[in-house]
Image 1: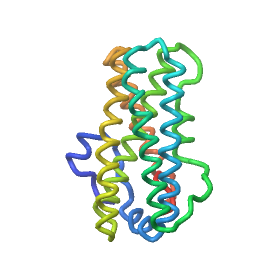
Image 2 (image 1 turned 60 degrees about the vertical axis):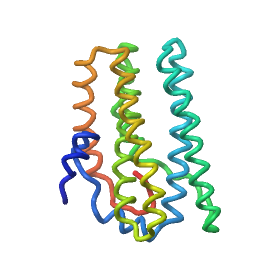
Image 3 (image 1 turned 30 degrees about the vertical axis):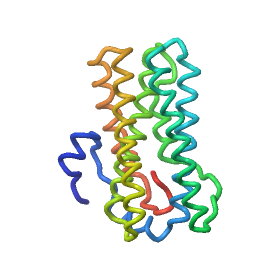
Image 4 (image 1 turned 90 degrees about the vertical axis):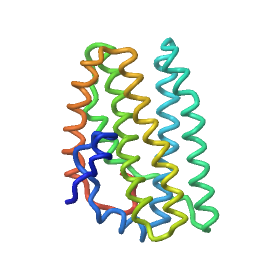
Length: 203
């Protein structure tokens, strides 16, 4: 399996790259990949709203995530419009095995700070992996228009990834954030190793 580029490693910190076969499979499953992408954007919107509701007293979190809600919902509408333009249908939402595996790693009990940290780092990791997948699509799809389409998403997700890390460091000791982030990256790599290579899903 090929190495992540140095720039990608430095930006995203991901330890395991997406299998190169994935983009080739996705290229043959555009209706499925666009459907799954649409639901990913929808779930990202809902997750940000949930964080705002749960931590409404955290002024910076509310201020920073409010425009992300608008942006993620705008992304959902963009993907939906692309499906409609191609006369493709928005299929049914699937079970997201990748995200569910990440949720299993979240702190469930204990102190409130630890739970908030894991919620923010989960979002950061999903955005980082999405960014890496969008980069694959922007470079590997045969359709030049779709390459540009996913380039825009890649750039957006990179910004979101860093935002969640910055929010964690706003409210929690930086060293604690970095230690836990390292644990999350190691765990995510093991999750990726267990996932089947399928072209009908973003994650």
